[in-house]
Length: 385
Image (cartoon, rainbow, N blue to C red):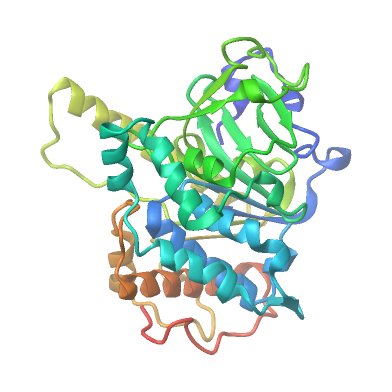
């Protein structure tokens, strides 16, 4: 997995870890972290199914960290802002549907990306400003990072276009390890999610005015100086780490990865003009980085890590667990091809994506994480996949 040390050979791995990331005693902790990938509304709903399954299996409350990027950050943000209002009974939140499912499904009935682009082009303010305003209106209602719980630690990740590093939003701090750390920042959840899901080129970049805050002296490495300390220019968290793994990997032994990311399609006749060819080459690079991260995670299980990976392109038959919910591969691959958009989605497609996230999470958890879990009685929605 790529490491931040590639940016500056004078920086040691130890300096890259905040107090929160640094394993106590130099060893990985036995806690569990959930990583939610990007992928627009497709990811938002697939991950909603993941959270639903974890809640039904009484694993949601066991999580120590939830790290997210892009579409996964929308789902994580809704869960995080409502966490302290969840009523856990025997380890299961009985009001999960009301507080988490309903607002996310309501958002999925609205198109945000096109409206944000048009308003950004023809009105004052940037496209990302309009997207952030829409998130705040539809979901977050002026809530800030300070409305997130202490545990689990929610980390909403964006990518700094300036430093090339992750820019992390969390309750105790926001941080770019090269620029510095801001403690207890009252940044809106909408701004954090808007930066995390600033999918390039149209929804990117997001800008955060850092002059409103105090950056902790000595908390950055080589870029704790103007103009870096004045304005953060950010893009989608998936540009750096499309599965949201980085901020969990360095601390916890149990890693759960829910991956609803897209996949580069073959092109028999790729364009040869400079602009389109460059975009295609960048797509190849991005696709390979994603594949390398996935391989590293999976190959670590049973060695340095425990946990499970499941993806929207996984074949549930490969998990070979008794009582797995029916999820025919042709049907699930249809869902995997859902465009990476923030666009209105029919109720049937919403429910199929949620059901698929629920089914594959159940299979992966019962196969690789907790063999004592019982098979589910059925899908969250009766229509199935």
